[in-house]
Length: 249
Ligand code: NAD
Image (cartoon, rainbow, N blue to C red; front, side, top):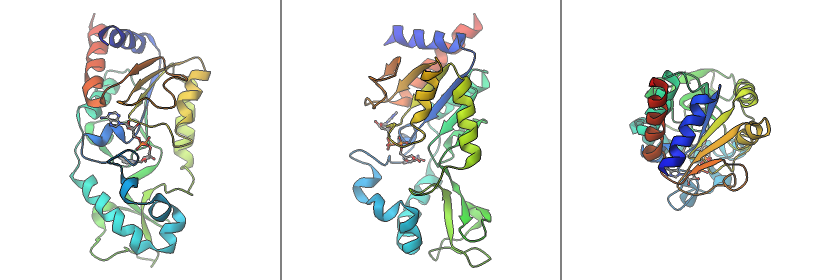
């Protein structure tokens, strides 16, 4: 492990541009459950009934019943050492962009600046009728579903199944994937498209894939160059520490 960690750190140091793709696994240790797996949200809530835009429109109060619990979890969550390590990598000038599938805002709370929120954010609400956006803390959720001043229905500003990825986020992520020489893939099952295509694009353009996950993903035996089978909060701080040491020499 130590040798490969050093090799990955050297790769990051000598590669011009490095990006990261993060998923729910990086925030698990901040107390936010993943969707898949034994403790995952989908064990309790059928995604067909709770995570599609059609289900939301059909029965917003029911879907909000689940969302309010997620909202409470998001409000209590704090970044963990893995989020801070990526923020430090950016501060050191070694991370060009961080594309996250997460909607928890923890990368920004840790200090990351160049964050592309591929699936939106739970820290804002958006009106389905007039498109007005509200910071989460400005909306009272005592009675569900919440409504906009125009009378429209408010939904967390996240992408449900059946909705498109925001155009700006797609453009930014694709532009980075085209020029990055390394992609750090952290805490994602790489099963949600199109986010899971980003590592493929980097690889096709001649870049390298460094993956951190306690479980192998479909990428691991397919395109991953360095696989660290571990929790993100254990390995990322060490990796970033190794990068820093090499930059100081
Ligand atoms: P996923 O639930 O499909 O997969 C999570 C992955 O994280 C798994 O591969 C798992 O092995 C790995 N993992 C578990 N613990 C880890 C740890 N400590 N360190 C590193 N990896 C760990 O999540 P996904 O791939 O992000 O895709 C699912 C969708 O779920 C995304 O669209 C995302 O928006 C949404 N989601 C977001 C949050 C959040 O914002 N925190 C939480 C749950 C789901």
